[in-house]
Length: 146
Image (tube, rainbow, N blue to C red; front, top):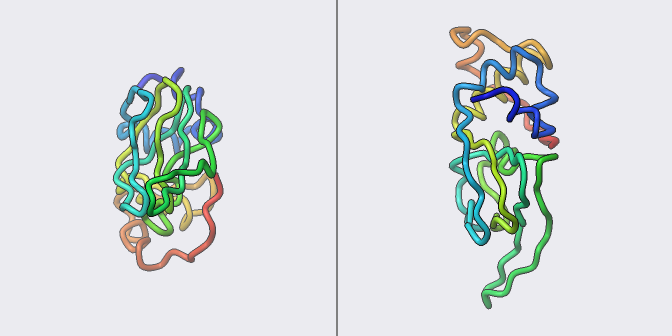
């Protein structure tokens, strides 16, 4: 993944060089096409999206099928960033405007989140650290900020 694309997303731009290097192999470019559903309401999150351009709408879909937009995500944010805490979205995520994103498997995102949370900001644990593998059972349940 080319570094100039990464800086187009505010969340990725704020990572330290070491943090960015640790996730860069898992970031895959994805074209965002209008009306594409990235996540179904209530479904488990499979991938995390870091938009570089375009817009993703967060929708609350009612039993009647009607939908209400409850939020938007663009290049300033991340879609699915709470995967490390609850693993699912409460609403549906649908692309509203053409664009591009970097997509990352949920498992890799959660692993990186746990390593950073245990070590402290800016001090990721080595991948082979025994504490890194214990992260899933030892993480405090704190809100994820995006």
